[in-house]
Image (cartoon, rainbow, N blue to C red):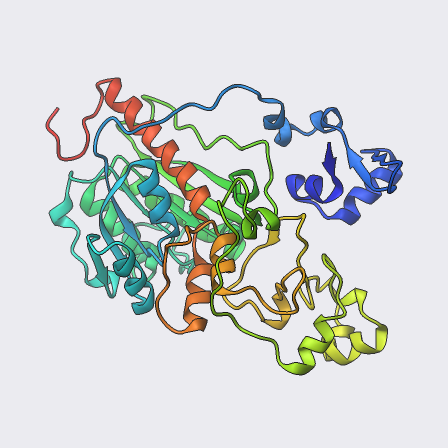
Length: 415
């Protein structure tokens, strides 16, 4: 059985949409006779093609790297992607990040990692030519000047995607993987993505996707979406298929993140965190678990929202308190920001740093450096570790099958 909140998350629609579908007969719910709560049976969801994975009961494949595959990670941040790829068995030989606090975080947790802190434009990747299997990273989404019908590699100069592409050109990996926000799909009317595609073609790679991944399907207790761009070198693109990570049937909640259970062996450890100002705390204390500004008395709504009260849109992030039994909303770079508040489900405060990290599935021993605001920002910008692990396993699986087929040796190893 699935609750309204779970089905809404799985389908990527609002609870209000499900209520409309219920009333119209498109997706009628069943009522629990004890509390009158609505729920859906597994069979009712079979009509949705994107949910067919919940009917797949086959055993998950055990994937282990059969060679020491080498990677380079760019725009590495605080290490969410890096930890996941490490767990999958990939050996990252070079990290680049410009933020000094994030670099300190990487070096403090993995002193043996080769962390190059600074401007990517100043890095020379040519010593790694044909020595790298995979290049990864999350380049910031920047608008390109649109030159003609297609933009070439040189036209991308001045953008951080150009530097990512340059690293690919100078190393010649078997594949590269970039993650970004969902908005890249529609950025600049789709021109940005089309230009990225044309540069990838010029480099001699075949683009897969783009592929939108919902973190809740990959053991992450958070409603987070990331756009994945994977491209395979043309000489390998038609030899074996790349298999995207297979979704898990269980969706984890905030309780799974912060309390002892399947995801973590103990409750979230204590750590520093921000606090609300007194006036804001008095308002937030009146919001029930899972509620937001509409659950406040109208006079308090108007006083708290001010001009925003009269604007359009749902403004569902304002005065928002999380619920133990639902995945957390996407974490932002600041937990107490008025437009995107993420209040603790019981206590009237933002999440602590350690709770933030738990929701992103960082291990408890991963320490973050810098001021408190910097730590929140590093965590909020990260790729969830468990989702990164699943992506890493898919990459390892692809490289294994390429090697077994005898079509390509691990980078740096003669055939």
